[in-house]
Length: 301
Image (cartoon, rainbow, N blue to C red; front, side, top):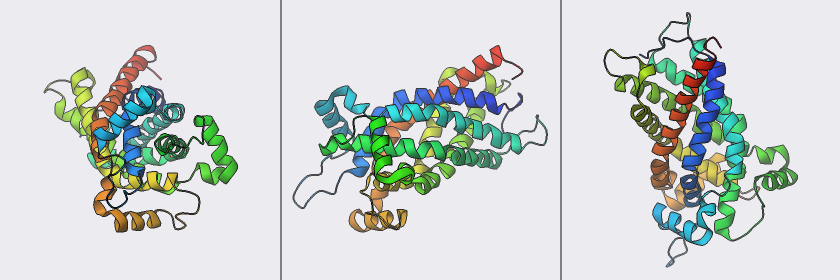
């Protein structure tokens, strides 16, 4: 069970979540670039080595060929999208908790926290899908050697011209399949770890910075253990040429498993796990700091 002495404020969750999301992108984007490039690299020809032999090889080659800017390629789209996206994500979690309370002082069970987290995943998909689509296209174009898009806005404009709003929202179902269960795991794990790490006789709100970082980082790892298979399918589907997968994620799954085996569903696993801890630790620390600031300046909001 979790300690929820203060009334839940979805509006404060909205504001603090936006700040937490910005912290996550700045810390995690370089390894997100590596993850997408590993997930979307073409299968190697017989007798030839793959484009990237693994996470560290991809990181090294990107840094050598494109410099630090290459690791942050495509970051404009998630920065523009991630602040409202994480704001909506934490708002959805706060709302999900509030909807399950009969009285403000009610303490929610872990399954209820999981359900509230799943609601946050539904809320974020509308913002997440276009940002992910643009980000993935920008991240893979540098490794392919072809420069089709000059930044996030140019990419969005060209995708819209070619395919309309359906092109912008390509991958919505897979984003839902990834984010709904993963968000449930994310928030439930964070609340569970905060309770475990809170010393006896102390309040969860008094948790130290290192313990908040530990809880947030581990929650990020649990989130991605659930999210990686649909994320691999999503990256492939969103970066595929129009018409390649007429039956959506089923065609992507069938082709991937047939050509590269079940293990291919965990492509980019190392990059994701290395990124998950620091990025999500930064996210939750940013959220908690912003929440404390908001509670200080607007205690009755």
